[in-house]
Length: 614
Image 1: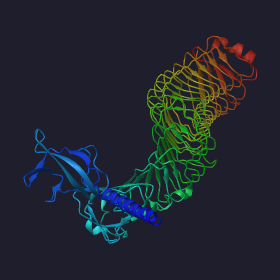
Image 2: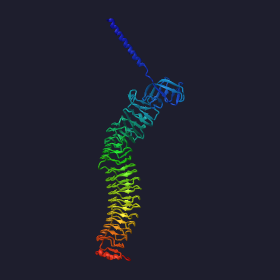
Image 3: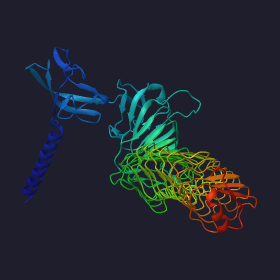
Image 4: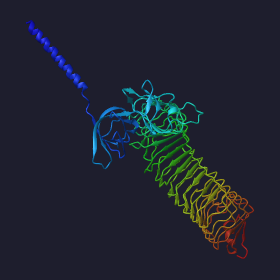
């Protein structure tokens, strides 16, 4: 029994020994080499053997590469992507056309192009030749997390630095007064990169794909001219950009920002399109420091409350041409004032009304719907594109601060009340306009000068009603009809002669035109409607044409300075007992001698006399 137990113990010891030996042997077994083929056209000879020039070969057969030199154009398949030591099988060729090759199993040592400090975590010196520095996340099982404080002394005008995807800290220049620049012209950062201090002359670009720009990404960062946040970023944490003292950033339209997200130095924001082409709801809500926003082509939907509370916003530019561009609900605050709005080519205006814009530039607008800017009380200037053919009805109605409009030279139509109630001081109407429609400039109290179209046929009802400072002295020779109330209340109007083309003068057409002193009405005029010259107290003498067929009621009511009125028609026009009342008591009405008795009989209270030689 005792012998059997000793045998079992012996067998167990032998089994354990064998297993240990097997494990030891397995541990000593060399890892299978990675098979790669070097494909570099230039080679050099070392110890009688061909080697690629991008590698240096030592006598023990090891190859050393700088991390910056790893480029898959040299290797097939891809070479290892992290610094370290690798077993590789390399095929050497003396020349690209050579059929002879040498295959060797060697050690591949991918070296860092910089020196690490004693902790192995911070970069203290750069020794690479490339101007584009790529930082790995780890080296020899340690995370590389930043630069040492004196790193600026060892970097010389790098083109770019690419931070790893893992956490990495970069301190810039801490002296605002220094003339020096940060070590690189461009920084590629990830969502885990933390920047601090100054980066003058440096452009920062985000390249990561996690979708989040985290809090503390920028700590008192200055000197960066512009920062672009790509479409991969779907969320910006509350204080992610709070420490970024940059003047301009580019965002994607998926994001939602709030005032606490942004540094007060950020004045200009460019919005790039997302996959949905929509500016998110509440995109800039309560962002009070941004002054200028440009929406790039591809963003064609504006979400609700997109600019609500943007008290500092002055300029808004759209670059997308769509069939209709509807702003979301409560897009702006009710008392908000925007100084400049730029609209893109191919644009059709619809719901851009409100109080928000002080200057508008339209690029090749093809259509404008009714009341496009109605009640925009802050708007001061509008430049309409050359492609526009029609200004819609009520387009700028009650834009009470609109002082300047530039119309396209080929404009064909200005619809009803388009500029009613504006503050225009002058207007240059293109020669392609043939009629000025109802109420077009109604109530434009500041309007002084109007350049009328050469081929104008008709000025319609109330076209210039209440334009009390309009000082026009001459109307175009093509004009045929002056509509009802067309110049009523134009108390500064100085017209003293109407064009020969006039055929009809409407009701109250020149009511209260106190300074007008018309002497002769043209032949061809057939009708003068009721009160056409009522309250024109500046008229002292007037001659009515032989072509006149009808005189309305109270045509000269209130013309108390009128002392001589000549009715030259060979036949008595259609005239009522009220037609000639309201003139001064001293007014003498001259008529053809053959009609003198007829006039006296019809109007016994008026003073008639015969026209000499009639």
